[in-house]
Image (cartoon, rainbow over all chains, first blue to last red; front, side, top):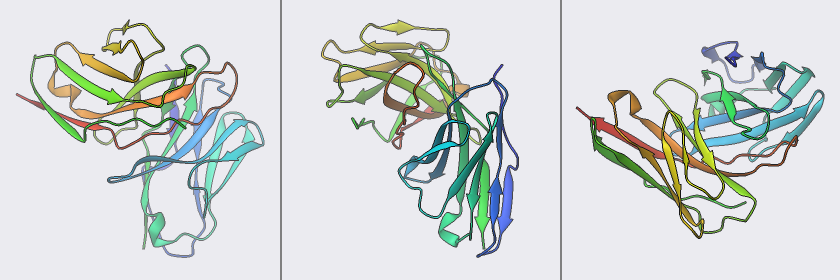
Length: 113
Length: 113
């Protein structure tokens, strides 16, 4: 089975801290995604990557950056965490055609104080 | 991008069929209709997808209107474990390329014992 693993289920950080959220997939998928999920807003795409060192902004990239140095790992970086970045963060990788389904990790719940 | 509209919530009795509707009136000819569901405290998981014809798999059935402006996810016998948020999304299925998938707020399904 495809496995997408997010490094931390729960994190508590202080305003201004740098935060790294790590995501690893074990199925050699090219495409990986970072979403955040907030009550009433559904899932919103932050960034996605379609290859190593390649990335594209999603719908809400402000305040975030990403890193894809290896195919299996896609990292989300909050350079200076703010309280409005308190959220559930979900990583996903995309399977091969024709289905191209997304496989999600369990999520990382970040609280910024 | 084409958008989808789903009811915010629905209820069903256990062991009865559930029909979850989705409107996508601006769908284009190349958009696939995908359904995902998110169980409590988990990331979303793929349920089913289709283009024009009705589809069945072990989890559910997908009925697509002839004009493709709407679709219905059918759970043939709801169980308590089917209580989740169900997302209907559209995507262009282009082999080998990364495509953004936009999730709305979905439908919260409550299954009553």
